[in-house]
Amino acid sequence: MRRKLHELAHGRAGDKGDTSILSVIAYRPEDFLLLREQVTASAVRQHLAGIALGEVRRFELPHLHALQFVCERALAGGVTTSLSLDAHGKSLSSALLELEIEA
Image (cartoon, rainbow, N blue to C red; front, side, top):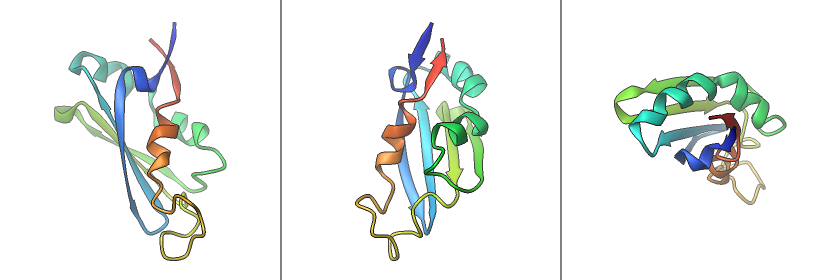
């Protein structure tokens, strides 16, 4: 059965220059292993293709039941140089939560 990530987790976003930092936090600790297994850097890069143009790195925060993704070249140059409506990339956390995984 396929489920959207937002059914299992919530997200947070931050930014630094042209880099978007996206966190996915499991609602329930028992779902963290599923997220860890399926929400890979490769899956996130593919899901955000055309947005995250650089490297996507994943960091695990097991005590928080969370994954953090550092997405380079994702903010059209960053807050001070972008004409984007969402220069901080806050909507990228919502976009990531649309990712479908096998549950």
